[in-house]
Length: 92
Image (cartoon, rainbow, N blue to C red):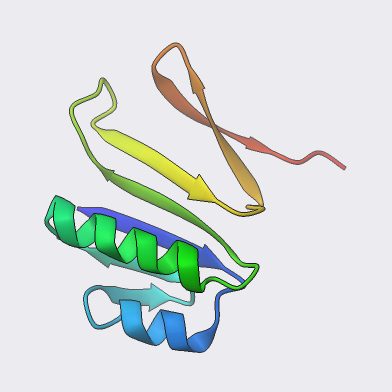
């Protein structure tokens, strides 16, 4: 399974990604994709985000069973601590 979350992304990009994945909530996409399709959609999102940001969660052989990729200025920062992914939020 693949989860792609986009922040401040153009509607056209969201429409294009929704051809491959479902969008149960604005900017959150879920699907069961091959690694090649996942990587192509990720490249497309990075190129077309126009100042937006994104986070990709996907199956891989790790202790937690998933990997994380990000681009742009995201509101929550994933941090890898000794092989485990944690999420850091901004404190005010």
